[in-house]
Amino acid sequence: MTFWALIILTALVTAVFLGFSLLRGRDTREPAAAYDLRVYREQLAGVDKDLARGVIGEADAERVRTEISRRILAADAQMQAQTAQAGPPVWVTITGIALVGAFLVGGAAWMYNLMGAAGLPDQPLSLRLEQAEILRAERPNQAEAEAAATPAPLPELDESYASLLNQLRETVAARPDDLQGHILLAQHEANAGNFPAAYKAQQRVIELSGDQVPADAYSHLAEMMILSARGYVSPEAEEALRQALQRDPRHGPALYYLGQMMVQVGRPDIGYRIWTDALRNAPAGAPWADAILAQLDELAFRAGVFNAPEIPAPAISGPSQDDIDAAAALPPEERQEMIRGMVNQLSDRLATEGGAPEDWARLIAALGVLGEGQRAIDIKNEAMEVFAGNAEALEIIDAAAYQAGIAQ
Image 1 (tube, rainbow, N blue to C red):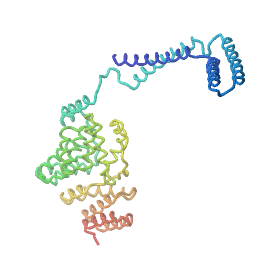
Image 2: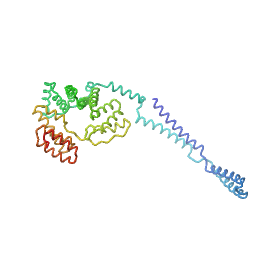
Image 3: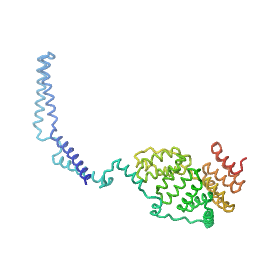
Image 4: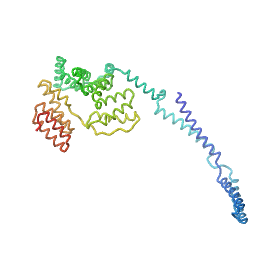
């Protein structure tokens, strides 16, 4: 209520000043003849001064006095003939003042009702920062967030893939210390949309990896936690992100989710800085960079800055090298069928849409695991043609060919 009274009072004071200026203009307005009279009287006084200094003679002075006196009489007669001041009637001026006042008061109230937040208390920066810290410290944990989130519907799996996934679950349950089995289980539970099971398997992967845990392992753990909570970054997910960044300060996916967490706790300014720093170091084709760019304009507005950097549009990535390496640890029959499905999808996409050198390299390496040497050679030759003249891309393709055992 105090704020409403303040803006109305401000608008009224502004209207009063404008009205005073309009009325004062009417009181001080004078006809043009009055100005002429002052000029003629000054000219008449000037004639006497010039005569006293000897600038003009007596005859010339008398002639000039006569002419000026004639003009003074004419101007005075003109003033006497005017019976009213120029300008609009008084009622028009008063009506204009009333309209201006109504416009200022009504317009201010309408704009605030449209754009403001009536009843919201003052929020100085220090208070908002303090509230953000409290929100961050007291936000729900992972279990609470999962319980409150609406479960996402699981995708319908192909019958053969679902059967393989069940076999993998049974195998891993029978071999709780099998690192490669847990890696595969975490990946394929995520592929199946079962994110809680995926991050629990990933936690076991980290436990079994000992001290040599890469940044990607913690980043994958955090991502599965966040997806389980429908986009919410819990304290446990934040800790996983910190662990990833401790191992790789430029880890793009971890920076993306950390920036998202800062926005959720009321610190878009920090989130914006994290995202722009991540974009400056983003490699070409980074999929997480596209997610940042899609939200950066809105975040820049909330942070009060408008200098979002430009990076190339990220390319779609295929199965990772970890997918391929982990699949190699399965029994031959399961490994062949599992990899073949991923390989065929990647091959179809590269044939129709193309892709980055890394995607071609993954396909060549996967074909090597499958034992399809001739097909790997054909893909390599095609990639050499696609990236002819690109030395960096050709090095990536050659490395993949060496890994697949088809290097010439």
